[in-house]
Amino acid sequence: MLEKPFDYTTLLSDLKTQIQAARTKAALAVNRELVLLYWSIGKRILEQQALQGWGAKVIQQLSNDLRLEFPDMQGLSKRNLQYMRAFAEAYSGEFVQQAAAQLPWFHNCVVLDKLKDAQTRAWYIRACIQNGWSRPILEMQIETKLHQRQGNAVNNFERTLPAPHAELAAQMLKDPYNFDFLGLGQEAHERDLENALIAHIKSFLLELGAGFAFVGNQYHLEINGKDYYLDLLFYHYRLHCFVVIDLKVTEFKPEYAGKMNFYLSAVDDLLRSAGDAPSIGMVLCKNKDKTDVEYALRGMSQPLGVSSFELSAMLPKELEGVLPTVAQLEALLTKNS
Image (tube, rainbow, N blue to C red; front, side, top):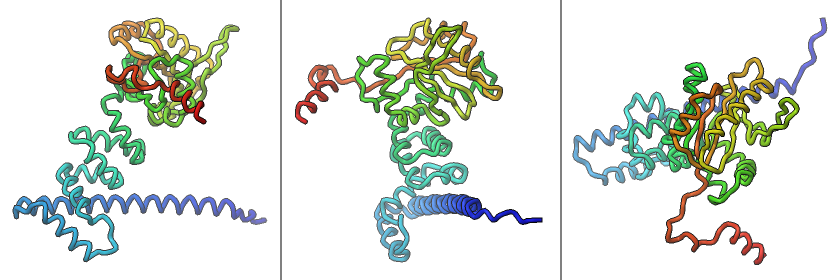
């Protein structure tokens, strides 16, 4: 019996994958041990300050002596020792073991710096672990108050989706969505908004949250010989369903829900496969009245939610009309180029 030919390319690829996985696992283990060490150092400092009545000067002395003893070790500066003390003061050893030690040290420092409430800190730490945010993204999510916006959209998921799926779908939606990255003014039209979101698709996907995969914009559906176009179509790989987004630059109107109900029925018939969950719709409008939305959704058979969006922070009234518009700035740059 002839031996199978030796496939060097496959062997190399497999070994690369194995080595990278091992390196990643080792790096995570090293990070965990480092964070646990920092918490332990911070706890000892706290205990001795309480027992001995030491002031802040002892931290500087500790930094000097430890760096003399361990000249090749990073992270023994006075500032970092102060972070260790704050870290130990903020969290129990159990929480550090279960959650905080899964994040890089400087992610934890960002959370300590920017948030004071213990529950809010824990929320962002768990969200960061789940979504794998980089440090700049973590900072951005904190600055835009994601914890106040996540799962805040009005929806009918409890009535139209099975229980576990309904809760996951509700957490998928935010209200309001922050579109500051588009640089659009309040006077933008729907097509302006759509084009800008597509042009900034990476930022848009980040704002939507983990799990969204872009399928297309102005997605064509033919129904009974008639043409229909979905503003934005996504597939959510965690919920295993299509997500249809309808953009509106006006206040929510009840007829928007009826139109979305129609779209979702069509998507389920034409695009949904056997393994997909029911498609979900989101009407994304400039603003909304919660009571209007609740009445509009009450009679809808398809799962849909309604959220608002913010384009940019409003200027103080005394500055309105004083600062140039985007169009004026573009005209000035064109003239001087």
